[in-house]
Length: 68
Image (cartoon, rainbow, N blue to C red; front, side):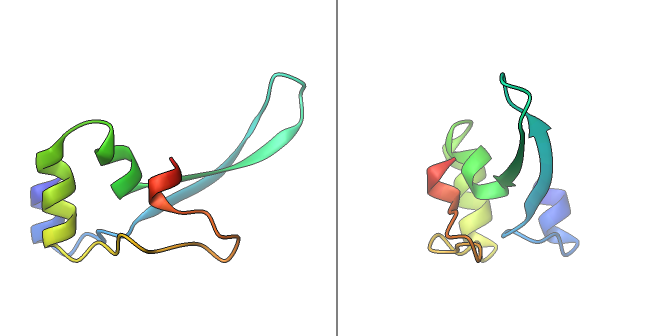
């Protein structure tokens, strides 16, 4: 991750997609780089924040990294 950030990776990156839930309904998915790092490693969170990750960032639908 540090290498990606060093070469211009976006610390506020969001992966968007869809998946089916248990009832067969299609639901949107949003995965924030910061939100994923929170549950994995303090060092990864620090690297993202040091690279400019906005801890207050939200999508137009009000999803945030801290909700992940």
